[in-house]
Image (cartoon, rainbow, N blue to C red; front, top):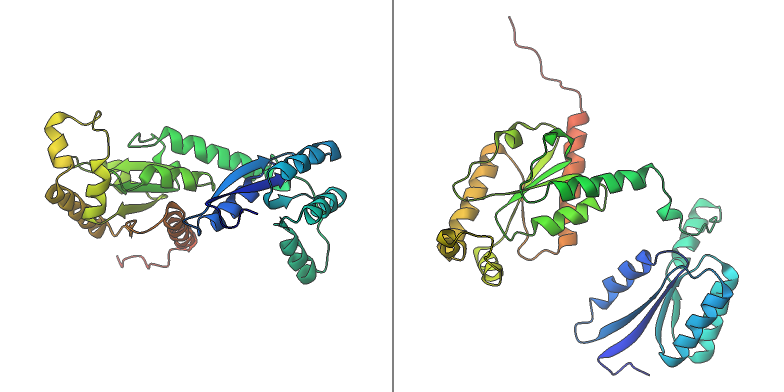
Length: 287
C-alpha cells in the first residue's frame, strides 16, 4: 500500500462532471502538507463498460476511490470490486442522501447531473462570469448599477481571483484597482445598487507579493515606489481613509484564502440587499 509514501493515487469517479468530487477531495487533501494526491478524474461514467475500464486501472494504480454514481447497480459493482482489491471506496453523496431522506421522509430521485441543468440559475451564473471578466481591473461598465459588488483594492490584494470566484457563484463583480494619485471614479461613489467593499492586507504581505511580480506593465518611474514598503503603507492608509469616508467595509486578506474572503463578501452582499429591500421609514422634513 502507499500509506507511507509521499504520493498516492486518488481516483475520482463520477457519472457527471466530477466537480463535486474534485472540490470535496481537495478540501481534504489540502490538510495533508507532506502527502500529495495523484488525481485520476473519471467523469461521465454511466455504463458498465466504462466502469470496467476504470476498475482495470484501479488494479494497476491502487489508491483511494471517491465516487458519485446515481445508478445503484454500477455503484454496488464499484464498491464490490474495491472491496475485493482491498482499497478504500467512498460514496461522497450517500451519507447526505440518507440524511435528507431521513429528515424529509422521501427518497431522492437520484437524477444524474441535476446540479448542472440548463436552468435560469445556470444562465444567471454564466452572465455573472461574462460581466466580471469584461469589467476586470478597472474596466468600468456604463451600466455600473448592474454590478452586484464593486471590489476595490490596491495592486496585489487578490481582487481578480476573488472576483472570478464570486462570479462562479452568480455575483456580478466590477473589479476596481486603487492607484496612487488617481481619484476614485465618481460613478463608483454614486452607484446605489452595488455593494462596495475594499480588500486590504499587511504592508509586508503586499511587499512580498510585489517583489515577485513582473513589472512590464508598470512605468519605470513608478516601479521603485511600487515595491517600496513606505509607499505600500501609504497606499493602504489611503484605502482605509477612503473606506472610512464613504463607510465602505474592508476585508483584510493577509491570512485569508480566496474562499474565505469570498464568503465574507457574499455575507456582506446579502446584508446589503436586505437593507435595500427595507422600506424607507425616514419621515419627510416639515415644511
